[in-house]
Length: 373
Length: 256
Image 1: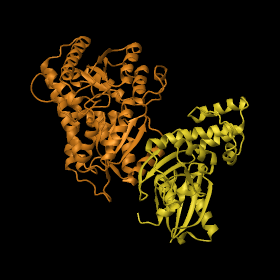
Image 2 (image 1 turned 90 degrees about the vertical axis):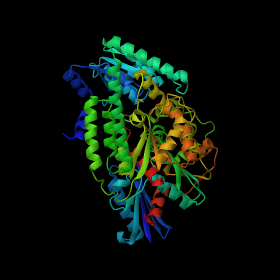
Image 3 (image 1 turned 180 degrees about the horizontal axis):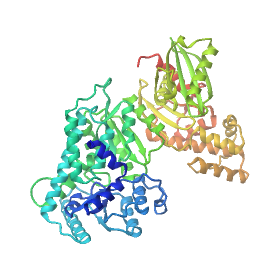
Image 4 (image 1 turned 45 degrees about the vertical axis):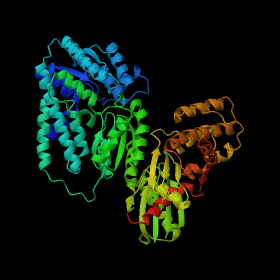
């Protein structure tokens, strides 16, 4: 099987993949919900970190516990748990980010009988020296919680190894993104999206090997000559679990060349620095990485990041891909849009849900945006 | 040169012929189940009516939700671009367009040269669209064409608070049960459309002069309610329903 085929097969039913992986390795699996989760500690505890990204099934059990104005990601994650699909999990980790994730944590604790439950109460403001120290303390507490829940000892050595592994994955993902940015015809947006999702679901060593193989193949390949060079675009938003959007963008004559997504750039862009105490190094990365709107990294930090991405990647426009009812992103949008307007960067706002709303309307919006460019 | 614009909307299909940019003829028909057949049929009809054959037409652009199914068109262009071009064709001063069609509504802002600067479209919900009005007309047993005139006679528009077509219908039914006058209910329906569509347009920032386009612009009550909600006078062309098709025919004269 070639690397892309193995990744696609895994993602077709991530729950079954993770269940089988656990059985095969006689290991333990810890679920998590957000890219702020310190995966390295889970890996160093000898467990498999599994990011939950919603559900493919119709949601009805979760709606009995949640308000109707709750995003499809949170509803989907709860649905998967309530339906028993996730009952192989040994535990679940909730980092402190948006309100809905915090309350999901409570609903999970009260309603889901399997596995341990851990909150990682990260600081919100990340720009001060005390926040950085607090971050390190939070990581130490999570280390202790994991050790107790899984009855293991997390050694510094294991943690260093885990950091090396996740840093290698981050570096490989960055190479993948750079390869595409240099020539968007070479790798499709849908493939990139699958690869990024797989990086949070598959056995990490297996994933890294597949990605390296994919990169070796892709960098040797000549890009097909395009009749008309596509419009270079950047995606910005939260969790993107809607690969169909990439196909729609490509059909309309656009190509995504970079992103600012939780399932994308924000998850891999900043490496964990080398040298010193592993916990301190992890804290350094977490306060330094591109923030999501549930964190504070300075008043204009996210706008500056987007504007510099546009310039650096030579993009023509930005598509905001926001999950419906995601209020942190919705509250950030007006100021981001204003900052882009000031720089004459055209942008399009698309609110989506998983599953996607009727295709016709999304296509019309994407096509009209590309006509406008 | 003769050019054609075919606008296959969710409820009605429109065709327009232009000759060297001059309006020759327009036509409106129901779309029905088969969008492709609807586009083909209206094109044949408008040619026949004009005593022309297909080879006389130098360029054809299809637009509207069914634009991809019009196989005889030279290319498909979104209704955003076509409504913008059509509005400028009808009135060269226009800087913003609000279009309310059968199943969606959109707001478009143009730059001084008529290029699309930004736009917004409603979500999957049908509230605030032509379909919404059709549902209400059925509930009230009033011909939709009379809605505009009736609502202008309202003394005290009813409050229709709901944003959802299904819920709004049940609100209207309770108003009917309470014996509320038809005129007031209809005016209330128009105000609810006005407030919903104006919220989308305000978010974009309307630049005057603003034109309202699309089939719903034929309803004077909606035009008045929307203008009030936007605090802006709305310009409406007698060709409002044909705007998208006019824009398509106009763009068909230009190289891609």
